[in-house]
View 1 (tube, rainbow, N blue to C red):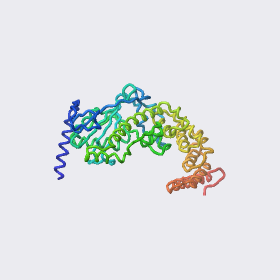
View 2 (cartoon, rainbow, N blue to C red):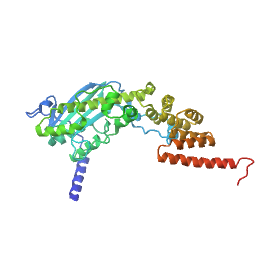
View 3 (tube, one colour):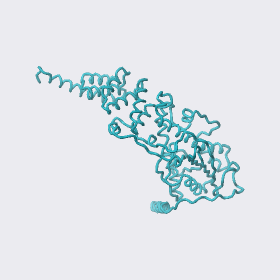
View 4 (cartoon, rainbow, N blue to C red):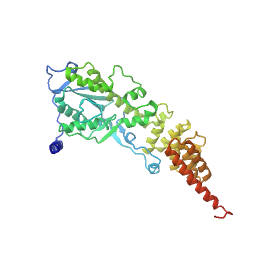
Length: 407
């Protein structure tokens, strides 16, 4: 069995490597078994269908800076090195973007999961051109997949929502099982990461439904819950049709259409961050960290100052570390004075007093306060260790004062 499987996988790899670029698909004439709910679709092969839809798409520039969408957030340890860099950019021609989403027979992936519905969209002169592909039965999967891959194109610039964890691995697996070459994306913007950074703390989640309501102000009517979609398609295999299939198709189309609108909104945030300084529509703390990581420390500092002034401890802490990395330790110290105490802020105050000001007495006092404010064993042990170390430093300093003898 093992040898047989190994041989089969070897043949699949050889087939994949030898696969030539996908040809244009010929459109077959409709047959008598053309499902009524797909009447306006093109039949590209037995059990495989395609249609195209155009929607308006505003606020996307001709060139998108993808760097904020993929930036690795600045940490306390990387700040000094990051501040030495200039602003970074990753320009992408918007016409090359491919927004992509699948509907499948399972929500957990796996080799037995089929992707029966796909939407691929690309921006074009203020519009969004969407192509949908539907698989009505298993035997048509190879033709259906070829059509999806043709729409994606070679080495696409993919935009998905949780596509790195689900859609792309699943499509790659289905292509392997059908002996097709999967076009690995040259860049993949998984919008879920951006959504979590900008809006999750404010909206309580980062699913497409939550983002549509909280960011775009949209509310779907008559939508199909995602967990019901696999069963609807599987039921249609037995009966030839399920009354909720048209809603499933609309659900998939709206997922991609609204993903493009969300990307445009996020791009506005990254392009004009000061327009969001009031903190009512975006997580300023995370946005500031993105700006700092992409070489826009001045803009990030402005957002952090506004958030810290309103009592956001995360922003105050990160701003303090940013100021210290910029050799502005006194400003960092003044920032923390009067702020409501927390373990992290008191530890930061202790660090500033010791390393920036050389005031061991204040450093020890702040560390002692941190012990009392610790909420976990790890925090308490870290603060206690700092207290012991500072006590030794204070004792040593006192023993070395003029007029005192060493014991």
